[in-house]
Image 1 (cartoon, rainbow, N blue to C red):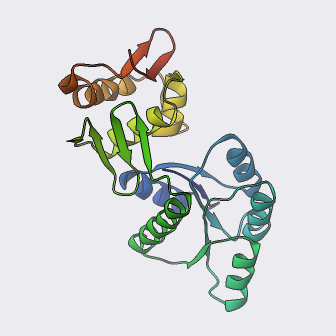
Image 2: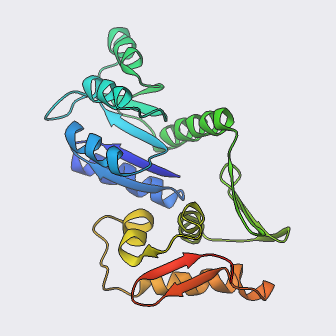
Length: 224
């Protein structure tokens, strides 16, 4: 699951983003409503955490623009003002939930999980499948040939990205942007290390490769 954090206070944005990543989500962060609209146009975000007070346009207008542009996934709005009027304005603008600052991160995480569960229930597609490999996005369980596979949070995110792009080669740069961080050092061999760890769990025990290297490009999840 990929989440966009729209927050102009850098410390707050990094705090939320770090917590989401540690919880096993993919997360990006931007500082303005305009940047958020551009990111959403180019990326399939499952949820947006949107602050009301932004330097270019407020969160209400940003939410309206996103909805009018066709974004239908959950929006969780953040504000330092706890008035009923602001909450009503946020919900009327297209927000699905509202959280007042300051907040405990555990509460934010609980709101995120609830909104994503609601989204999955509405879509009735909480499971990604390819060949004999299956990933349940709600329970975060992975299995192949019916056998459970235990993955770390980062391995899960990497496999999710490969599954969402099954049969389509993805570059190391796109992996770094979606699974790690938009400023990730693409010269690092961390991606290759994690792919190898994933292969040991997803491919090696089953005798048939699904994760393949595309020389000079990146990786692809496909049957041989």
